[in-house]
Image 1 (cartoon, rainbow, N blue to C red):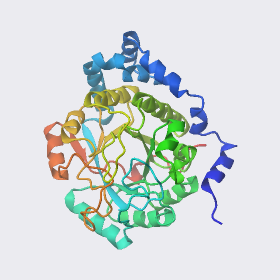
Image 2 (cartoon, rainbow, N blue to C red):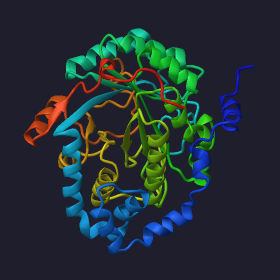
Image 3 (tube, helix red, strand yellow):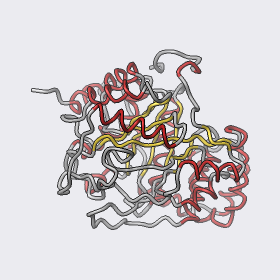
Image 4 (cartoon, rainbow, N blue to C red):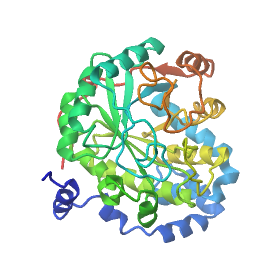
Length: 396
């Protein structure tokens, strides 16, 4: 019988604490209440600090901070330009399979959805790479899959990465959580980074949104970030799906706790955050439990930048062009462009069912031109293995 990764992980956790253990000591209800009780004075105090803690972040995220949005925008721009200059890192996602064994109630790829399932062959994957290189000088690629380890597991990902090295300098994946040794194996093939959305940190409600499949295992997903760090993954991307939980401020605060924890334990790793607002998935009827408006998206972006000057903040093509244009000078440092969110969408299957609806449909060339008009310099290659001063994994 195949080994159970969750059982093995639980055995390891008896020796090493991971973030899910830390999270048990952070009350969702008390955090929600603290955010609601933040005052004008709390916000002023946070804005006066050069380095903020999570309590300050809660103040900047709270309704009490809404009158200070312009001040927060100026600070966010200042810290962003001090750390990143006026650059914008560009990447493109490639979905290589929509096969999935999970039943996430909000996702168009869930296993009960009667749709055609596609697993691109190595030849088709290479065709997609070639098509992407015709769009723009992309060097940063994100390989995305549904979560089906039996049909699109580590050997499949390793092959896709091996081929990608011929075309791209920086290769990231957004796939199911893996074992530490599997992340390590993929880094040896050329993997640079991993993106994984916790979706929500509300432990009890998480099960409602993810009723079946490996993704239903809250701790396995939550502790995947520790396993990435233990494997020495160069960059780790985090995110919560805005719309799952009514109290989105609490969810984002939990991510801030998680970010600080990871930075403390895996200090050589580079981190990025994302606040994707839920968009309708095709053939689905799930209604978001909350709606984050544009001002609130701006507020959470500014708050995160003031909280952490070094973290990458990423906006995908889920967001409309006018939002991305406005925020590209105020805190965002990474953007996708000309994204297709269906397997083989650039060449092989351009009309296949998408995971969600893309909002910014401009071409990469159009986005490139607009960023330059706004005083930003698009960067198509922002990291290479030869840039690393340190070799090997993170200290344990």
